[in-house]
Figure 1 (cartoon, rainbow, N blue to C red):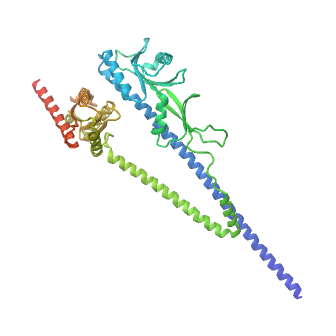
Figure 2 (cartoon, rainbow, N blue to C red; figure 1 turned 90 degrees about the vertical axis):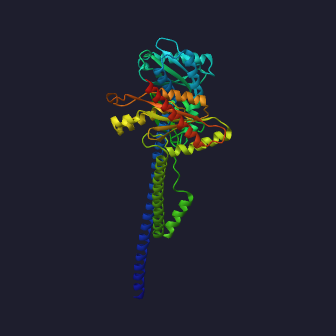
Figure 3 (cartoon, rainbow, N blue to C red; figure 1 turned 180 degrees about the vertical axis):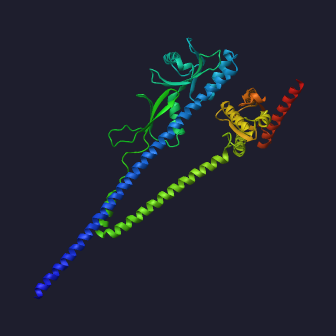
Length: 476
């Protein structure tokens, strides 16, 4: 009897024990499934973030490349505008202007004028080109000039010589009636231009290559050719400049995302499975909490960085014209003045005032005056070098710092600005069709004058010029 009872109790204990083991096994399997699901979720999130970052990087790089190439066109645009205003320039003057453009524009090899059914005339002949390369460049430019739209819109194309040199050719059509089927041609050395851009012009340098169809225009030294599906990520985007379409490819990351399970992770999972589902769940809940907090901190840090960048931009730029503001200019001017003093280098300053701006405000309103100021700012930017510092000084006054510029050169720049005539939008019916610029000039002296005195000298020169204009108008 006691044996039968003991046997029944043992069976009950065994059944209860096995039930507990089964529950513990189920909890363990559920914990393992949760761990694996969390690992897969982390892997998916990292891969998704990598793809998103890839598209962001290549979009920024493509936009920066287009802006960099368009800035090179600014030299051709400046010469085009000069010819539109001065059609009576002699050939020696054109040669001097072309030589100056080649000297002050990076990677510009040569510049000239091409007309319909006429040979290409070089104002500044491309240097370091073989005769065969120059002849091939002339043929390519002449062939492009035969296209119908070559005289209507700017065009850009690449020429690969037999010696392997790649030249970037830009055509800027003239707009005057006398030169309707004429265009300014600029030839750039494309390889150093792209090398300079991808090494120093890109905010996030990554392995990259630029393709024109199947032809490779540029390929970085750290580019890795994809050997299989697990090779480097290749993100690509079309870069469109005029009618030219290139393909930009970059490798900002690898397709193999960092493995979420290492041998240490496997050991931890094994220990977690042995220790029980409760401890494992707590550990992974804490890990998930830490991950969520890190993501929240990262998002807030990114928001603070964007806000800081926006505040920095507002503190250094003029909101209306997009130029540097007075505070930023004064800080930079002090640095340029100290550098010029220390190394005994020339430094000039131009103070600019818009003639007739008060009439525009009185007759057309302050909104028209604001639009006019933006047009003046754009006109000044097109006529200056990249090294010059242009800022809005206040109201309708602008100031320009000209490093490495003598007084004679600064006076020449001032004369060019004084000849500029800027049309007033909808102002012809109100008697203010256009406005001109008054320019004052000063330069740094090697005596004991301060940077403020140089600015004051430019301001005095400006008002002297305005008084001179008033006297001339009174005599008339």
